[in-house]
Length: 254
Ligand SMILES: [Ca+2]
Ligand SMILES: [Ca+2]
Ligand SMILES: [Ca+2]
Image (cartoon, rainbow, N blue to C red; front, side):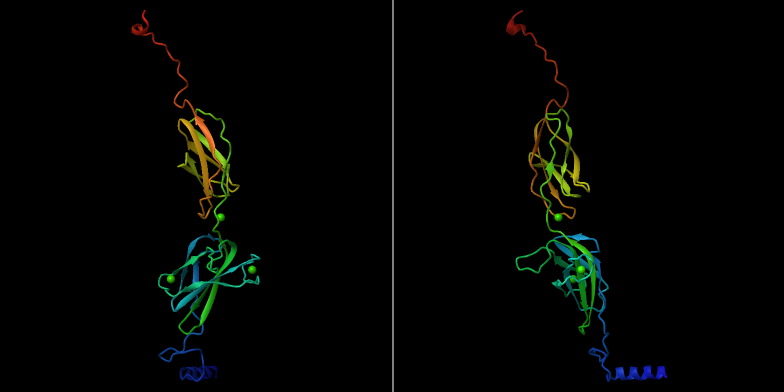
């Protein structure tokens, strides 16, 4: 009995007497649901910046994919905050599996969240019959702000006779630091999870004016330059030598 009903329904569908969505040019029914696109990057927990490349897969059968984002104010991974989805754009070229997202705010607005954490990223795929299917990735951070200027601790002792000294200070946690001597790049290092850093620095005979700048963990920067610290290296090679007076008979006589 059931088999009979299924056969009759199938015939009716094929004859187009029961509507099942739009039909193709061949008169065959389209699938009711568009193919799902999986966002492979960014992943939950990622912090992204600047012009980010959204990567996705499994687009077969989709004609285009629309991307949008949502500010997850209560950080629960759901678009339930009373905010609205903001349009990112539509990828019409699905052959390359990526779409550029400018995450920085623009004067026109709507181009990106600028700085927001967390954000929900949505991808809605459409097929030729305008069926659509949405997926989203939660807990994405967007960070476009460089760190503030690092602070260098005073250099002890000063002056020194050591060619290698340690430059210590504080910066944003996990930031990358660049040290300069007299404005010329000299060394780099990384701040720990408390923002502390200790970087070995080779200095030259005479006065060395040291400054630093920082990039945050995702590469925003550089920060403004730190206030400078000056260290003077004296007698680096060896302790002061005893000097001898050479009696020059030609000049001074016997
Ligand atoms: Ca939410
Ligand atoms: Ca594309
Ligand atoms: Ca930052």
